[in-house]
Amino acid sequence: MFEIAPVDAALVVAGLLLAFVGAAVSVYAVTLTGLLVGAGAGYALAPTLTGFLAVEGAVLSAVAVLGGAAVGAFVAYSGLSFAVLGIGAVVGGFLGRFVAGPLYAGGAGGLEGTLLLAGATLAGVAVGAVFGFVLTRSTLVVSTAFIGAAFATRSLTRAEFAAAGSELALDPLLFDPVAPAFLGVFALGVLSQFGLFKFGYVTKLVALMPGARRWTASDDD
Image (cartoon, rainbow, N blue to C red):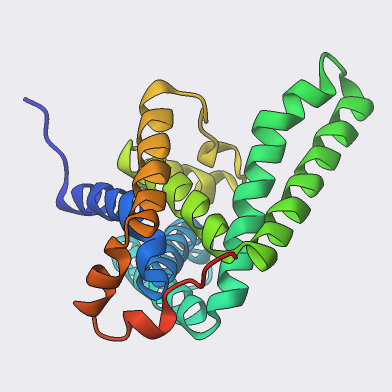
C-alpha cells in the first residue's frame, strides 16, 4: 500500500497552493516560496554542519529546516519586490540551463559545451530577473506555478535536498521540466492563476485574507 509521510504530504499541498493561487495573494505566495526554499536549503546544509556541531543528526536537521524556513520566509516577506526578482532569476536560470542550454549547446562537449551551458544559464538568470522587475505579476504567476508544480508532482522531495547536502552539489535537485505530470500541473497552474485575475476572483480572494490586499501583485499594465 502506498504511504506518504505527513511532511511530504504537506509539501505536495503547499506546491498545489503555490501552483494554482500563488500570484493571487503575493505576500503569502512569496513568503511560502521563501519558506520552502529556506527549509530546503537548511535540510541540504544540515549534513555539512554535523562535523561542526555536537548535536544529534535528527535534531540538527530539524533545527536547520526550521531555521532556514524562518529566514527564507522573513527575507521574502520583508522584500516582496526583490523576492519576486530573485524568484524570477532562479526559475529563469533553471530554464536557461536545462531547457534552452541543451538546445543551444547542441552536441558541444568539453570546455566549449560548459561555456555554452554557463552562458545559457546566466542569460536565463538575467531574463528572469528583468521580467521579475518589469512584469512582476506575470513573473510571479509563472514562477509560483513552476516551483509549486515541482513540489506538487514530487519532482523535488526531501530525498533530493538531502542528497544535495551530502554531495554538496545541485545535481540531485535537477528534474525533468518536460515530464508530463510536471508540465500538466504547471500549465494548469498558469492558466488558473491568469484566470483568477482575468475574471476578477482575486478581489474576492484577497478580501478574505488579512494583509493580502496591500501586497497583491500590481497589474503588469
